[in-house]
Image (cartoon, rainbow over all chains, first blue to last red):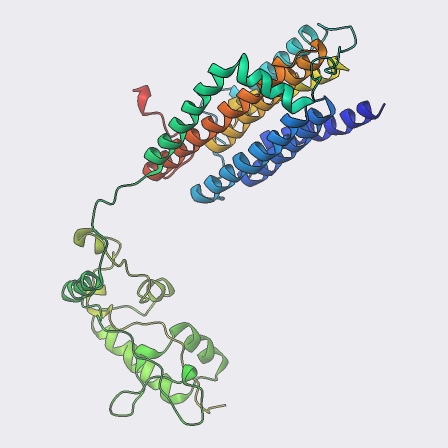
Amino acid sequence: MGESITFWVLAVVSVVAALGLVFSRRAVYSALMLGVVMLSLAVLYAVQDAPFLAAVQIIVYTGAVMMLFLFVLMLVGVDSSDSLVETIKGQRFWAIVAGLAFAALLAFGIGNAFVAAPKGLTAATQGGNVPSLAQLIFTRHVFAFEVTSALLITAALGAMVLAHRERTAPKATQRDLSRQRFVTFGRTGKNPAPLPGPGTYARHNAIDMPALLPDGGVSPLSVNRYIARHEAEEGTLPPEIARVLEQDDLERRSNGHSTPTLAEDARSGPDTEPLIEDEDDEAAPHDQPDEAVTAGRIAPRPRSEEDGK
Amino acid sequence: MTTHYLVLSALLFAIGGVGVLVRRNAIVVFMCVELMLNACNLAFVTFARQNGNLDGQVIAFFVMIVAAAEVVIGLAIIVTIFRTRRSASVDDASLLKY
């Protein structure tokens, strides 16, 4: 009685989870559903006089194999969703038909092969389940057992060989990076130096102040254009900064540059520059021809707000 | 009761087979293969109890070992393919076809 209750609960759970594994769109959900199926199968093993296999199922499958699956999912990208294009016409429909037919064949063919009550394992496991299993494994199946050790070693070596990636270029040192910055500077005019830090005033936190040039004026390099535009719309932009930005825009326009766009601002940030690339590849994403002149001038930076409020 | 276990095993095996046929993501296909292996294990354990013979459980144990090794190699292959092709879809790796 207790066994049939366990069976029916776990059968429903495992079949539903298996269907979820097949039909859920996201791979992570599939992995979790597979974990549910494995856990319920472990309980079913335990119910069927196989406590050792139940423990191994939990340790090996839900422990090791599921972790491996999740690791690879994270490596490959959780967002990698399925393509829904059918490359073979009607494949999905016929696959489901074949699956149903196969399930019916198995269930009606083999499922009814036994009508007698199960013999049970009490006679076969006199000294307990694990010692009896060990006796079988180390006597009759000892050759297969030794071969599996070779298999496991081969698998570990194979995984190392397959997943190993030889570094084809030496790791970039600081010297290489610096050289790369100056090469970029020579080819595109992008400023090789760090961007100017925000200025400091005695009464203010430094981060919301613009950097000051040697003559005391505001450095437009240190002003974030997004925030400046937002504040200009709200009317809270300090007039001095507004004037400097306007002048800077005029200068850039006179150099043949259009008004700064959002995409351009985002692209010319200091962090988006590819650090070490092949020199020919480096300029490839810079599709605007006049960026060479002005790339060094635009720089997103937390912009200041003086006591203009 | 044996019949119930065998039918459940057949259902899980068929669901896994449909998943292998239907899904495109190589990792999910792999999970479906694992589901099929698990269904086979359930059948082995059921047969062991039905016949009063521990050999079925030994075989299930070996199936688990082979499945673990297979997962290790398969996932390493998937990672390698993903690294070169930037895709884990089984449709993209069709170079041997031509």
